[in-house]
Length: 581
Ligand code: ADP
Image 1 (cartoon, rainbow, N blue to C red):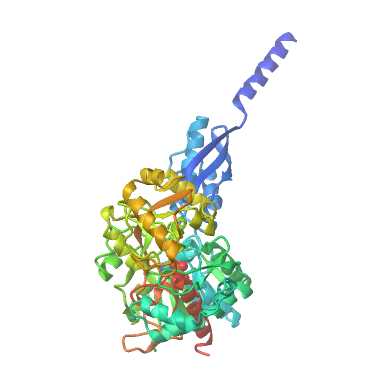
Image 2: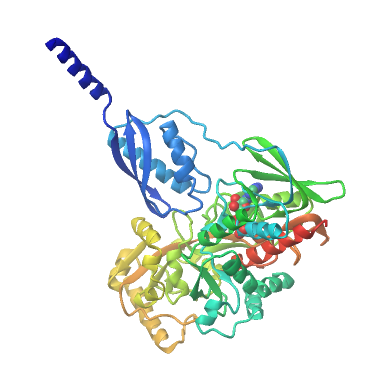
């Protein structure tokens, strides 16, 4: 009996040994917007679950990182899985965090190659009234409008998530005489003034008719977004972007395109638009009479045909991330430039349109965003104080440009400075206007960690931290404080007035110009119809948004991208729905 008890006890303790309790370990990865912190539960040397404790990644683009990709990591017990296109940094951050947790727990993950490609489960040929290519702001505006006209609509997006560059932008939209402008006491703005600023801002190289339609319909577009699509905008906050003579840009709550695109995509879905991601449009189908009647698209080597009874709308965005296309259009913008754009910004729509006879115009006009992250090329939203009374200086502490000048002027100015970078410097007076440190807390943390963001109680200390010449900065600030008092900037004639830098804390952020927007593109008319070289519309084909040319001339003004995508996206949707009645 004694023997039996002993054997039983031994057997039990062995089982207990073999079934070691699940282990938990934390890991941290470097996300695009700060740390990605997770807790992984391991059991028997395998990942059981991953809990995301902290992350501030783009809610739309990184959605699949924390769902599909996370599930793949668990399923394959490996970080050797495909990342999510358009969210590479977030994907790598999660992998890094899981690996760190595994190292901590002493767990060896699988290193086998995995195949996590998403296969599409649908017929290879389908027919809709309207086919929209591209899931950015222009694509959604077009899709919603066409659906509202009773049409069946499919929207094709090549990336795993919709949104395009529209979702990573600040989401501001210019509309003269908008509610926020009025609430701030600006009562004399008009669509014509917006038109004039846009024309002058693009060196009068835009098509006046296209610009007039955009500025005349801007207020309507803003009300459509706010009151119909239910996008939340601030009531009492408006931005005066460079080149504008009024504070006419409304801003979505949270100051990111996530609010706008998030609402537009769920609205489109509610309206019955079929949204397909991970599918790349490759070619337009033209019938014998020269009408565009569909799109050929692909996923994982499989070809899908989408017939369009009414029309096809190209809304594929620009070509800022396509270095070869950029160099062909303008050799100045070669590989030495980073880009603020998502990797899907490769100009596919331009190639497809040109093949069916569309004319491309203004391709040489490429815009850099003046103050971007020197490491990744991403826009630095926390550098925005340069539009609200802060100053731009070089590393000698000198100003060299009017802070409210056009993006191209500021960018070219920066490229002439030592090291080809600049700093935005501001004090408490400016900080109080937008609470930038708090509003962009993730950027603040990430940029501080990266050594390009600085905060100090005194200007001397700030200069030392940032590597700006101390005496140079002090001399500049002395002058600026004088200009702030008189309201007259004797050096660069700042149009809205500079703030005094006479109270800390002081801030500085380092930035470089990065490719941001391609002004040229498919030639369209005011009905968003695609035109050929003879100026004749190609039946059944429409284009809207960054892929279209003619609206911004040589240089796009801040806040006009959203105005264009909503105004022309809606027009394209309407026109396509009405075509071939
Ligand atoms: P816009 O501001 O003009 O709407 P965005 O950059 O916001 O432009 O959106 C364009 C979208 O089009 C992006 O999401 C991009 O991934 C998508 N896109 C680009 N080329 C293709 C293609 N060949 N097929 C499907 N989608 C595409």
